[in-house]
Length: 146
Image (cartoon, rainbow, N blue to C red; front, side, top):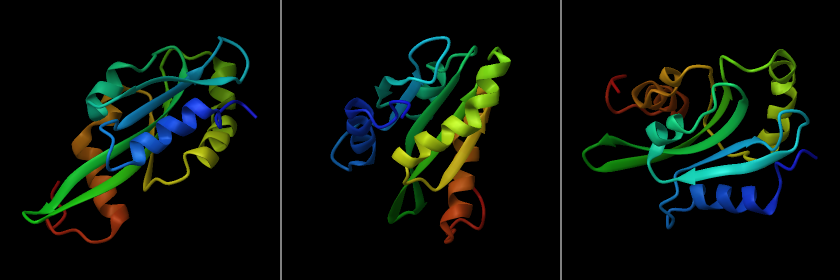
């Protein structure tokens, strides 16, 4: 396998999913410019904006992020998003393999409500992703407003 199931990635995945850990995102990158070996690049506690700042414009990366949002004054929801980042400067062959290799990563990071395919940082806008999560989650207590 590509390394997506490495102990470091599995531990980071568990941390992002845990209610007791402040870690709310993880980023997986390729170990080298060629090949399909994946490694855990970074984790963080600053949400989508912090994650977006870590993305490499010249490569494909995979991220898993915890998103918390309020349904109303009394309730909070926690959902997860899987991000496939294909930077605008990514080489053609790496782009071509991204779909296939994303499948291997999805088998490991398997619990998420939406997949976000991104090539620009604005694709990771929190309000847009929360709106997608609300839609995917069914109940919407805000009448469709983010």
